[in-house]
Image 1 (cartoon, rainbow, N blue to C red):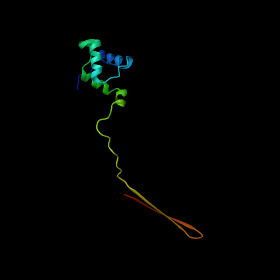
Image 2: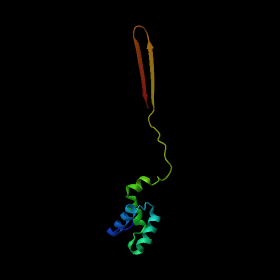
Image 3: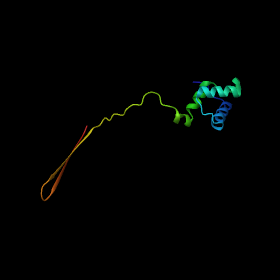
Image 4: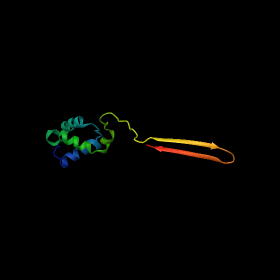
Length: 99
């Protein structure tokens, strides 16, 4: 973990990311901040990465890691419906099996 960003770092990140629409990843945002604010004022890569992880926009649009897993049901349901029609009444028999 990187040291927490200073208030100056947070204001720079918020300004560049939201106000100036620099919706980029860690490395590109790091390079933009280094060019614009210099090495002394800009946050480190780790601080940028930690800050990005907390942003809702980044959480929504970051691709998931790994392959999507299929969901397997642990329950099977078997239903048997039997209609027996005899005059004058009809009979319905229902058999339900859960496993």
